[in-house]
Length: 339
Image (cartoon, rainbow, N blue to C red; front, side):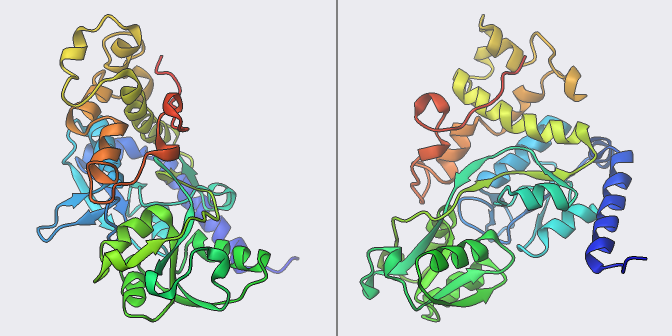
């Protein structure tokens, strides 16, 4: 008999958990509870962060709100569960949260061995480097021997190792469990460089004592498609979370906004009318009310709107749309047709 390994035990436990939750639809549980439990970060400007009154905001938070609006008809019916990188997958597997919307990179391992499914991409990103201007470095290729602050339990750790090895450079990793701890260590001079997804670097820079003294280097060393995650084995919930994101992207492409969505009910465009549940399959395929996408747009906005106010031109971060622009405007944001 082959020796039983902890890896095998973990795999079996994950499968049992997945099967158990598949028998009880997450959608039904959320609607019965009347609250959507959304896993978010412990605090990252532009993506998911709470103010002093406990009010959450960010592009990931708006995706959480959109899921609640589609499922419950009310974007405020949410319990936010802040999680660090090490906690996030266990919290989802165990049922502590209904979905994880926390700057999580879609990879083969995560998609195939954790009992989880990625539902799409709400932000295309890539890993970069934040440095103090005073060290005079213009390129990541000048970082040989640097002390690098990094968050544990992230894809950034392996990407960093791969990049330095490929370029015959060495580094000293200074590892922390949270975004804030990593940024504070960099601010206090415990490392020369802070590495993470570029979007996170722009957000973390706003937490520094002198943000103007730090700069993001031009190199992007990885692909980081970030998106919502759900448990495997529950196709109904998987479809709801997936099409919530798709509806926001489709709404931007069709020019349907939070401000004009009521007026657009009078549109003669078949695509707009299908989006708003006025004709076609409406909510039947998802087991939701026919106005599920209308509620998303009315209460939260389309994808362009949530990008702009949280991380784009209307936010302190001023991040360009880049890859996150619509496919018709030079980016790669693309939603399958709602029909």
